Amino acid sequence: MSKATPAADRVFVPYHQLQDVLGFKYHRVHLNRLIAAGRFSTPRRLSDNRIAWLHKDLIAWAEARQPVRKGGRPRVRLEDDDKADRFAREQEGRA
Figure 1 (cartoon, one colour):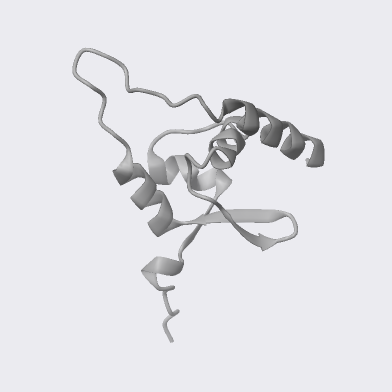
Figure 2 (spheres, helix red, strand yellow; figure 1 turned 30 degrees about the vertical axis):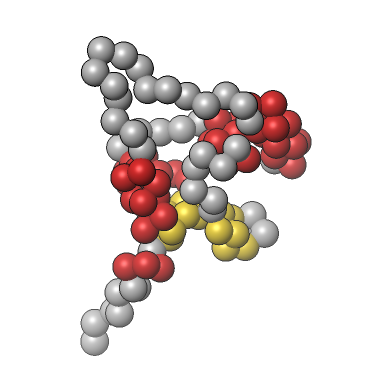
């Protein structure tokens, strides 16, 4: 008897596996800031203490990133940083 594999659009990626999927790692606080600012894929709550991202959402987010401009760094939007910082502090308080 073989195990059924989940549909490709329903594969969940927990925080500790983000680096495997994206190729780099974000600190949880920074990730919370990006999520609050709408600059990173929103995770799904699997249970009271567990969140994960859909694999297809992470790939779509990575593909939507702008390439680095020749001879310079990519532009970064900073207008939502205060809101993102408040959200990150709230999340740290819950941990």
